[in-house]
Each structure stands twice: as C-alpha cells, then as structure tokens.
Image (cartoon, rainbow, N blue to C red):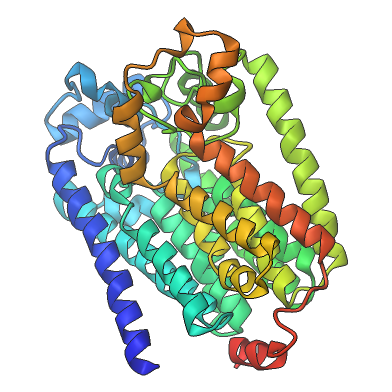
Length: 454
C-alpha cells in the first residue's frame, strides 16, 4: 500500500507538472502574458498609488506608465486584451494580491503562478486522499484517473493566471481539513480566502457546510467571520482611491457581460469565436435559442433555484456522514457552475465530486454506473485539451445559419460542459434525495468513517 500511495502522489504531481509546464510555454507565446493576473496586479498597484482601478482609462494610464507598454495585441488576441484592460476584481482580491503588487512584475507573476500550482496540486492530492479512504484499491484507481485527467488539463490556469486556481484549490483543502478534522483553523483560513477571492466558486460549498450542521456548521460560521475581517479593511482601503468603487465595478461587470463582449454567454461573444464552451454556465445553452438576457437569465435562475431547494432540503434532513455527505458535495460542485458566469478552470471544483465515485462504483447497480459516467463526462468536457480539440472540429459551424431544431441537436457538441454539469447536478440531487441516510457501505461503514476521522 505505501508503494501504491507513493505512485499515486507521483502521478498526480506529474499531471500537475504537465499543465504547469505546457501552460507556461503557451503563455510565453502570448503577447499579453497571464492577462487575468496582470489585471489584478496593476489594479492593486493603482490602489497603492491612490488611483482608481475601476476606471478603465485610469487603469490603462497606470498600466502604460508602469509597464512601459500600451496593451495592444493582434486581432486574434482581443480576448486577452479585454480581460486585461477592465478591472472586475473585488477589493478583497486586490488587497490579498497587494504584497505581490509591491514587487516588480517579473518576480510577482512567477510567485503567483507557483502559488496557483501549489494550491491546485494540494487540492488534487487531498481529494485523492479522501477518495482513497472511501473505496477499495480498484475503486480508488478510478478516482486517481479522474484526478490526473483534471490536473493534466489546467493549461489555461497558467496561461491566464486566473484566481480560480487559488480559490478552488483552497476550497478543496478546507473541505479536507473539516472532514478529516485536522488542521481545522487552516481550513477556516483557506475557505475564507477562497470566499473573498471568488465567492461564486466556493460560496455554495460554504452553504453546504452551514446546512450540514454540527461541527461543519461551526466551521462555516468561523469562516464567515474571518472573511468579514478580510473584507472590511479591503473595502476601506479601496474606498480611499475609489469612493464609488461598487458602482464602477457593477458598470464594468455589465460592460463585459453586454452583447458580444467577453463575459456574454450568448453565441456572439468574443469568447466563443472558434471555441467550444469557454463559458460553461447554463445561460450558454438557453441563449442559443433566444439570445436575450431577459429570457435566458430568469429561466436559468429558476432551474438553479429548484435544484438548490431540493438539494438543500435533502441536506438538512439527511446526515452529514456516510454517502449522502459526498453526494451532497458532488451535487453542489456541479450546481455552482450553472447559474453564474464560469469558465472551465472554475470547474476544477469537481474535485469535490471525485470522492463520490468510489462509493458509486461500490454500489454495483445501474445508478452507481450512471453517476460515475456522468461525473466522468463532466470532468472530460470541462478539461482544456478535449475542449481545444472540440473547438477545432466545430470552428466552421455557424449556429445563426441553422434552424432551432438543428441547434438543439448540435448542443452536445457546441455546449457539452453545461449539459454534462446539469445532468450531473440532477443525478446527485436525486440520489441524495432518495437516499439521504444511506450508509457508505454496510460491510465497512464503521471502518471507513474511522479512517476518515483518525
């Protein structure tokens, strides 16, 4: 067993290394560099210099004067340019990155990429640790394969330097700390940082902890208090340079989500030209038939509210132990991606769905096989390399030139990620609802629970 564990660790680290190396090499060929981190870095430098980071004109002036270049790139790189020149980051994000913003760009972005890589690797290793304890050697091999697949497909994280790597990684680390009942204050700190970095990634995981009750609820409340302690000074700090920051931030978010812009879920978004599922929320599916926010947003929100209500009721009425615990986490990881703006790198939150797979596989019934299949498909279609291949295959497909019926039948190819995430979410909500008190395995429940908590 020690040799098997060592080999698993090596394979996970190797998979992470593949993503890091290939992402950095691809980044070197991009004139904009890690655009997402540049936006945070120069946004924080704006505040340090008492300039408004949420004013695009002011942001560009600071960027140009301090970097020595104006961010102009070829037409094919307009996506990165748009991500660079509009600050849509929370004050808490700018505050947390401020220590790096005090350094020169060279060392700061290297440290940031190392931090992203460390968080992602730690999350993968700990997710495997959880899965390994929930199944036999055969069943844990599936979890290892899925985790390695996810880790080998994180190139965009290192190309853009997106905060999702840190936020999602720390969220998974926190869950491990709480479930294992080890280093719980480290877990509280990790989840608090994750919440203030990307609340739309880890917010519903926090909600699960709150609803689960017991020690998990206590950890959720401690996390909320610590997040508030981070947020208050961040807002005060940013308000000194940008008194109207909240309105300006909303304006920037509205601008980047407008018709055809970078965060627009519709088919005309510049994010979607030549790409498949670069935005993975459910709005991207509905907008194929009616590209009007007034139509697709209410419909998607209604679907997500129904899923959340069913999931929440099952979570409250069930136990925070046994299989239901992992079904609930897997379900909320999928639901988190559906209602608001997300990209494939945010879907690394599906690491929290991996521990449910050994439990499902051990069931030996049709439901278990369906659950493993749906989770596996969701992981594959939110992975960078499969999406890149799919993008090449459909790059000449013009949805505007075909009828509604034809658009419907092309959805598995043009919008596979949100469909797979929706199916995965529905499955775990249903199985949690029908078996909220289901044990892990009647033969070895006590042994497995003991291993998880000791």
